[in-house]
Image (cartoon, rainbow, N blue to C red):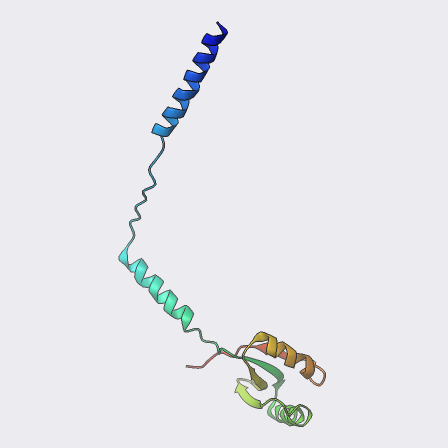
Amino acid sequence: MRQLNNYRNALLILACISTSALCAQSGDLVINQDKKIETLIELKKALNTSENTSKRYKIQIFSGNRSSAEAAKSKFSTELPNWTSKMVYETPNYKVWVGSFRTRLEADRALVKIHKEFPTAFIFKPKIKE
């Protein structure tokens, strides 16, 4: 009797395993999409690669009126002559930008030195005007 129960249980387990294999789904997937979606994806990729930002980092040490910007630029040139500085006009302020750093790490190292004289200085990537 005990052997019969074991045999019946084994047969039941075998039947469950074989039916679950028969009910499994195939791995085929078909995606139907409009061809315009591919065009939009390619356009998005092109926009991402031609970002409107410079590849270099700069440090802004001043933003305000023209005379104060000129004073900040000349002070920077005398105090820290290692980096170039330029004055840029972005309505309504004149800004003084310093350096042209390839990596954020280079810019951070320069910022540590610049912060001693210009505590409001910060790092940024300028936008390219087209």
